[in-house]
Structures are given as structure tokens and as C-alpha cells.
Image (cartoon, rainbow, N blue to C red; front, side):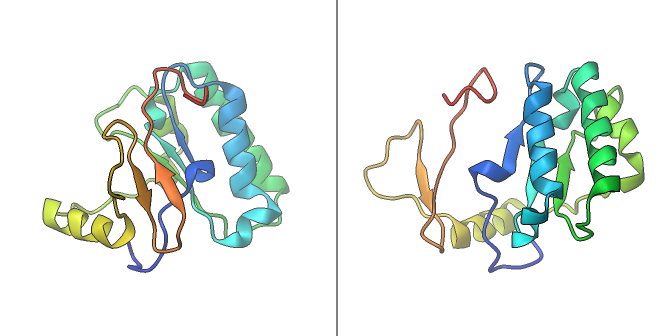
Amino acid sequence: RHSETEPLPTYDEVLVCTPDTEEEEVELIVRRALSYDSQNQKIYCLLGAEKLVYKVSKQLEYHFFRLLQSSTVSDYRFIIFCNAKAHNSYVITAFDTYKVTIPCYSMTEIQAYLSTHLKVPCGTAPVAQAFEEPYQQNMKFIISNQAGMGR
């Protein structure tokens, strides 16, 4: 949100977490964020990380700190989004040192920001709408009950 011209994250940069999210999925996005190739200005995100089960949360912490120590990338871009009201989440506790409160934006500000980044093509089905970014990339929002299943 700091730059009006920055593109939104693409499908390979975002993992929407559920209680069914597996350790391999979490490890993969952490590896992408902390790898040498991540210096291409991508922003890797975990959304709803408070929903991860305890075992996967522990593995997220393990992989992140292990890869961080062995990584030569100092300017990685990795964001973990959690619900502030989820006090019983291991992820929130493990990454508390890195906690940043996101400022509140009005609905008008959010809509204005998204309207500069997303454009709905004519004739698109309402279930899975494709949005066109300024960089001519297509983005689809697909809702699935099983994370990472490509549905």
C-alpha cells in the first residue's frame, strides 16, 4: 500500500491457510521467500496463518528460522497475516517479535487502491472473476475447501 504503482502479489506469492494446509505448502512458500531468486521484488504472503494447526505452525517457525540463518538474502519480503483476535495461535506467539499493526483504511481508500490495480473484463463469470493488472497479468480469485488442490 506504500506505493500506488507496485503490482499486487501473484498466485505463486500467496498461500491462503486453512486447518488443512500442509507442512510442505508452508515450507515451499518460506523457501521461495528466502531464496536468492526472491530478490526479484516479489512479496510472499501467508494469509490466515492463525488457522494453521499446531504441528504445521511449529514447522513454519522451524523452516523460517533455519532458512533465515542459512540465507544470504537480507532484504526478503515475507508477510504473515493473522487475525489479531486469535490469541491461541502458535504463529502469533512464535513471530511476536516481528509483529506490525496494519493501519486502518476506509472502504473508499481500499476501493480506490484496488480500482487502480484491478479491472474486471466484460463477460467474466461472477464465480471466478479474472482481474487485469496494469502489467497485463491475469489474476483469479478461486475459493476452495481444500488448500493447494488447484480447484
